[in-house]
Length: 190
Picture 1 (cartoon, rainbow, N blue to C red):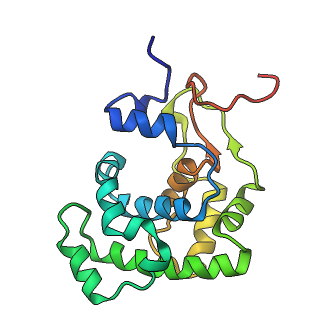
Picture 2 (picture 1 turned 90 degrees about the vertical axis):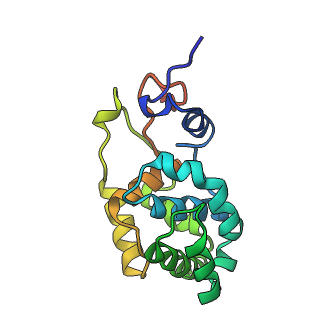
């Protein structure tokens, strides 16, 4: 019997697997959070499926999403990335990833971890929304606006509110699974 899931996640298999195993699950690991932040930045203007299909290539090209290494990338590495046909070759996004990796470490020093920093925007608990269908879900919220504004103030790039809301959904700061989805967090009394 086929499981009920969010409509965007029924096809292809790579989307189903991502939805069922990762999307919307609360994430606290700084390395994984940086991976999501980097991938969401590269997704800007493209479909998530495009990025998901290239995820393993991004992982190889960007040193397993090690922000400490990425922060040290030089012109030679940037040129190498620009020649890599297996990733999205956008110089502005590559440069933003390097800068964001540097700034990421500043946030870790200030807050103890990037996780501690981002979770404060949702009072340290996932926001569980109640949606009947995918079309009801907003592209931004006051929380994504606030996080985006703060990240921009700190110098981050490719962190507009829409990108940040997608990041928040992916990292489980927000549960936007529709009501009938088998992944939906069940609230007490519901």
